[in-house]
Structures are given as structure tokens and as C-alpha cells.
Image (tube, rainbow, N blue to C red):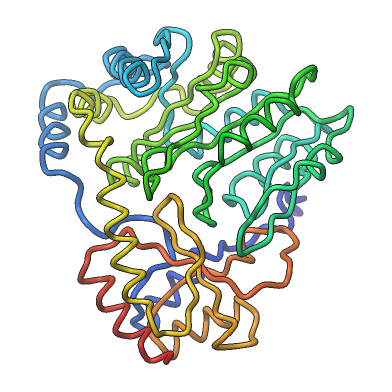
Length: 381
């Protein structure tokens, strides 16, 4: 039987390719974005407690009430924002499911969606699965600055949604207050919705501040903000996140959510609710990861890899043009085979990549993992 693929241009992701190569050649894997260390033991104890407290059946479709209450308290404490947990916060099976559900809620065939590349690789396939037209705005290194005149020109009568991501995966760039104000001005007097991917909200460095759409009333009223417990608490395998949106948008979001997931892991939701009682666990996360970033940057000194600015996330991009003229895919393959370290080519985050010599490393690793990778990278000298 012939199956007419809905995603004909999609193959095996570069993350799977690089991880498989890392295993094949015994390389240290700094390609995929997940920690290689354990989460706080107290969080694991809480999860174990709730597994044995009878909390093993379906959770409420919108999420365990106490978890949504704690999230409301969190955002009140962080930003002075008063969220109503009953109709503005929905627990999802990870940030990616939240993103897909937002797009499924909004996009019909031939609706246009603007987003910025390099981009997290789920955006475009999600748009296309809904019959939408993906319209990427290309940002180029090393600064990945946004040309707002170009963004303005991309809008048309068919534009239904714009997607932003701050802090950005893969570049580590964060949006400034000026970026948010430009976006707010651009969207005023339009019927365009906004999806803000903020899963790395607490991973911001050098004294800088996260700019959430929730802090901008004109953006908040038309926007869905997506967050992730996995990124915050080093439990990416738990696949739990949440989406915040105004009541009228949340109502439509939940209509889709109930049919593609319905509810999320019950005992882990209760564990996360208890863990949220200590704000220090997320308020000090920037210090924890900034130390890892700086440690990794020190290891890169003298390797010929030129680090780009990393303002947030746990990803460090590097320009390798001093070392090779190969394209970034060939260079990362060579790096695995000959040096023994796996990275990701940044071109894989574009639909039609510009010419560049930039690769991405994940530094959410144990110090010994980073040190071992640093020793191998010294061979590049």
C-alpha cells in the first residue's frame, strides 16, 4: 500500500544521528540537550511517595489542582502576575506537546505562521501537519539580531500566528525589552496570535533578565506561553510542562489537549507541586548553569573553537572557521570520529541554512564529563 507522507521531507533527526555516531565511535555526547546528572534526591523521594500513596489513576484533564495553584503562586511571586489556575494554566505532557497543541488549536490549511530560524525543530513539522504555511525569518550568527523591518514585511492577510523562543535554542540568545516592545507594536491592530516558547526561562546569565510575554499585557492577551519542568528540574524524561494563556484561549486549547493527551502523569504532578514550595530550586538555577557555562568556556580556550555569546539556555555555540572549511555537518561528523566529542551542526535548525561554520554543544553535564570532553578538544590545537 502507498502512504502519501504528511511530512515527506522529514527523516531521522540530526540529534539521533549524532547520538548514534557518539555510541558507535565512543565519543562524549554533548549533542543532545539533556543533563547527564541526577535531579535532586528530594524530588525523587516525593515522586516515590506519591507512587505509593494511591495517586496512580487519571489526573484531572487540566492538571492536578494543587500543582496549578503552586504555579499561580510562582508567577505572582516572580512577576506580580495574578493567574487564575482554573482557566489560565494547563499541565501538558512536556513543552513540545504544549507547542503542538497550541498550533493545532489555531492553524487551519493555508494559515501562515511566522517564526525565527535557527529554531527548535518541532515548530515547522507541527505547522505543516495542520496544513499551515511555515514562513521562517532567517537570523544569522554570530549575533542573531532581529531585523524588525524584515519581520514587518513578512506579515500578510493570511498570517495567523507568530512563534518566538527566548532564551533561544540553539543560539543561547535572549530577547531584550526592545525586542518585546517591537513585537508588541507590530502585533497591535492585528488578529495575529502569539506562541512564546519559554522553556529555558530560568537559565539566564550575567545578571540579565527573562522577558516573558506575561509581563506585557498587550502580548499576554493574544498569547500562549509554554514552559517545561524537565528543563528546570533536570527531569527531561518526565515530559511534563504547562501552558499559560487567557481564559478564552485556554478554553480552545483544552478542547484539543483533551483529545491528544487528555491528562498527564499523576504522581509526578503531585511531586512537582510539593517541590515548588521551595522557590530557591528555580531561582538559583541560573547560578548553577552559569558556572557550568563558564567552566566549559575555560575548557575551550586555545582549541580554535570561537565561542559565541551565550546569554541563556544550556547550549554553547562555537564558530569553527579557524579549524576547517568543511560544512558544519561534515565537521561534526569528523569531530565525533577523530576527536571523540559529539556536537550538533547549527544548520540543522534551519529549513534552508545560510552558509556558516557554527556548531552547538550542550553543557548540561557533570563536571567530569565536560572535563573529559575538554581534554579531547585540546587535540584541535
